[in-house]
Structure formats: C-alpha cells, structure tokens
Figure 1 (cartoon, rainbow, N blue to C red):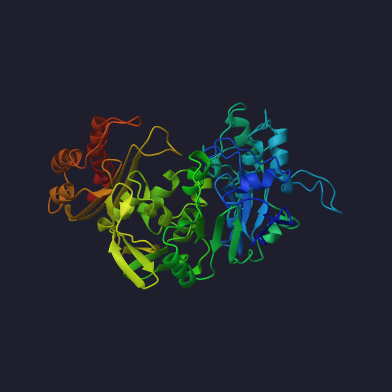
Figure 2 (figure 1 turned 60 degrees about the horizontal axis):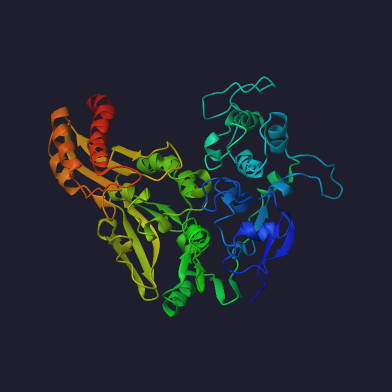
Length: 492
C-alpha cells in the first residue's frame, strides 16, 4: 500500500516513492525543499529541523521542532509539516511577500553567514516563537542589542535552550542570540499562530510497503500487541531518536517497523495520591511541561537530557527500551523507585525498574511485549539531585550519571535511594551506599564514609569518555556535593 501522505507547507504530498526507511529529511529534499540540510545524520546539529503540528499542552496544537534526519517519513503519514521555506509568505496567493519575523531578525542581526545551519535554526526559533506561555519580561529591544534578563532567557521570554540542539560553525552564536531575543510576539493574523487554536491531525493507521520493507501503525494498543505477537522481531519506534541513528550511521534496515508514538493508551499522564503514571510514548518535552516541576528529580533531568530537538521526540519508554547503561533517565527512575508496566497480547505485568535490566542492553521484556507506562510511587523524597558528569554542559552523553533521593527527618537519613549510570553493564542501584546512609545522621562524617562506599559501587571502565578512576571519584564527589548543597536547607 502506498497511500501515505504528508501535508507539507500546506500542500498534500504523497510519501511515495520514498522507501519505508527513508527519513523526513530525504523525503523533503527529494521534493526540492533543500533548506532542510543534513549535517550529522544523528540528531546532534539541528541543520535538519522542521516544525510538526502536535497535540498541545496549553493549546490544541503546538508547533514542535524535530530532527527530520531521524524520523521516518512514513511516521508522519497524515501529519502536518512546515519547513523553513513554508514560514515565509513569498508564494502564498493574495498575501504580500514577506519574511517570517524569525527570518527577518536573523537577517538584520547578522545571524547567518554560510547559511548551511540557518534554516534549522530558523525552524527551532519558530517553535519557540510560537510556544504558548512565552511572554515579554522587559521593554522591547532595539538595534543595539537585547537587554537580557539572564544569559539564557531574553526579555521577550525566549528560552535559548530551545536552540541547544542547533550548531553553527562559522557565524558565532551572539548574532543568533540577538535575533532570538529580538523577536516579538505572534500577531492575531499570523496563520501559524491561528493554527494552534485547532486540533492537530488525528493519528491515522498506516501500512506503507515498498521494496520488501513495511512501516505499520495501528489505531489501538490491542491491535498493536496482536501485530507484535505475529511479528515479534519487528522494530518498534516512538520518536526514532535511537533507531534513526542506526538507519543513518550503521545502515540498518528492518523488514517491519511498527510505530507506537501516537497510541492513546501510551500517552496518558495520571497523578494520583499514591503514584504518578507516565505513558511510555509521551515525549520528554510533553512530560516536562505537563508535570511542571511536580517531580523535582525529573525536572533536574530534563534540561540535561540531550537537546530540546531530541526531547521533542524522545520518550521514557524508548530510553528504557534500548537498555543502554548510559541512558540518563534510568538512574533518575531508579532513585524514584519507579516500575515499568509491560503489556503484551495476553495482559500486563508491573516490574520494579531495579529488576528490569538483566545485562548489557538486555531486560526482562519478552518478545512481543511493550513498555506501556512508567509508574512512580508517592510521596516523593524531599531531598533530591541529579548530577550528570559529561564533557559538555548540555547535549552530551554521560560519563557518569548519579541520581539521589533522600528522606531526612530530624537530621537522620530515614531512606536513601541512589541510581547510577555509566559505571556498569546496566543502570544500577547503589545498594551498599544506601545502607551506609540509612539510619545515620546527615553529617559530614556520615557522608564521607558513604562516599567511600559509593566510589566502590559498580564496575566502571576506562574508555574515551572517562577513566574508571575518574568515574569512581565522581561518584564520591556527587554525595559530598549534595551534602554541601542541602545541609543548610535540612538544618533550617
């Protein structure tokens, strides 16, 4: 079947003759939309970013920027995409030609030099431009530059972290930042702003087959699980932030790919008195905005997890499903004592995350089984921290990741939960350190003793990111850092 179609810049466009493994990037460039560029082919440079209409958090629709180099074109069947070419009004009948406000500011403030990365920056900036809740905090800027409220947020409410997945190698970031901090607010006549008030396209069932490969999307979880019973070796994708790299860099191909990102049963978020249940197919950005700081440890994780472009597609289910020992979410979820709800055609089961990983990129998940949700028990620990040790402040892979969650009452550690990543073949709980802390005073002496124990947790190794000795040292330092940060708050 080849009836899959995408609405691109307002035009209904067939996906054929693209193959099921072809990316949105290749699909767009094959139709002459060459503003979308390939820079890295693994979601790290943002030259390929485009806007997709997705279910909104504060409005019916959000314009979300994603890496088109990672997403299969077939995954956007029935969906709506805007490229850098579609932001301007140059080719719209009856509308005077003009640049989009983001494009205008990039031009007048010198934000483009060779121009290769510029369309990607423009699309990411446009997503932030249309973000509901963005509002001005100071007087409008003038041509001399922005009167910043801080280094990473402009007086117009623009969050520079929205550009954290976009790289520029020749212009320098100051004029790009100036352009970002200079854009105003969307007008009532802006068609893309108006579009936010209407619902996004509903998910459609997809069966797209060409050249021996098939891309499938079912309408319900029940149908999807039946499909996976029949084809247990099918590749399951949500945001494709991992699978897209495999396709591009390692030339992997699958005879059958099954998309689960739009299944309503995997996209819920429920906050109850005794637990918080997060759908496995909610993107990290959706979780972040819907929880709005309600789980402080997750709130610390999100800004350090890859980039905004990746978080707009990545899911907790996908991060756990890959089984990577250096994924950023497992240490946090281990510290939160989370469990995973696994579903197959025969029913569901709940598995504590501490028992989920069985080996390097291996887990208890059986063929045909999906992660339906992540469940976090309440009440939450009051003293928490997430420390990510990496070579870059943002958008990098962890050398070590440490998540800590403590209950401290009357100066005594009543409960300690510590999750670690990057120090073993799987994410692990620091059980010996937890024992060394529990029942002891939250004092420098206790912390020093526990830090020595923490240094011995896991089996860290030497690699190009860090030495085993450095990883061990960072484990101990993490506990000392938390004590230094919290002693005053706990004792007050």
